[in-house]
Image 1 (spheres, rainbow, N blue to C red):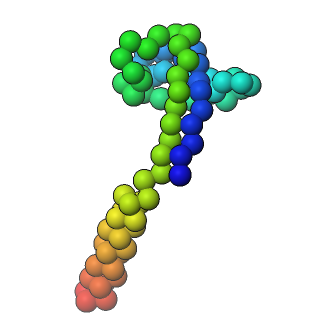
Image 2 (cartoon, one colour):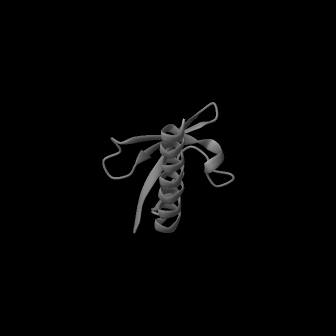
Length: 78
C-alpha cells in the first residue's frame, strides 16, 4: 500500500526540517534534515511517499513472537 502527499519545506530548525502538508498547510511534520534530498531549502515543494513494508513487518512480528516464547519458556523453567 502506498500513500503520497506534497509538503512545503517551511523552515529548518537546527537539524530538523519543518514541513507543512500542502493544500491546507495546517499539518506540520518535523523530520531530520538528513532525510531530505540534498540541496533542499526553505520554500521547496517535496513529494513525500510512504510505503508499508509488509514483508519486514511480518518478519519483525515473527522475531518478537519467538523472543516472547523464549522468555515465557525461560520463566517456566526458572
